[in-house]
Amino acid sequence: MSKKEREYSAEISDKVIGMMTMFKGKDLADFPIPCLTKWLGGTLIEASRGMIEIEIKANRNMTNPAGYLHGGIQCAMIDDAMGWACATLGYEHQFLSTNLNVDYLGTARADDVVRIKAYIFREGSTLLHAVAEIRKNDVIIAKAQSNVYISGKPVDYRNIAGSFGRM
Image (cartoon, rainbow, N blue to C red; front, side, top):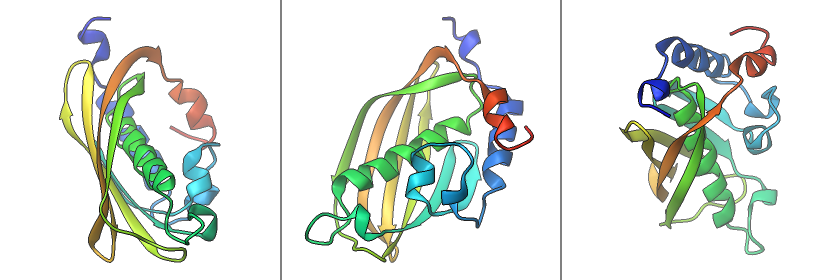
């Protein structure tokens, strides 16, 4: 696939950001697309090209037996946010993570509210470098980075948009 075929579309980017913005301040558990975002729930704080910020209230189902927010759940929160940050870029192709490295630096418990911010640090012609962090009370409890491949598989944005009734 040539570089030209991987160029982003400002129109698609604007539409994906517009779709996400419809959920700003609303419960993402009501998200109309069945995906991890719906299960995690939370509230969209901000979305722009290459960046997303979400708050999630941890629940007991997200903790380990000791009651702390499970590392796997933190990783899932980060991965999901990174995926949305990639989606806001406006490429017509699916993204595939090639690696994901998470550093766990603190803790959260059930009923704590955490804020996940993910953004694209570097946008290459075939690879993206995404970074993210989870904060509790403005203190970083996890940070991560991932390389994401811009695949040759198209995304059916029109089908996705049908879930929202517009796009």
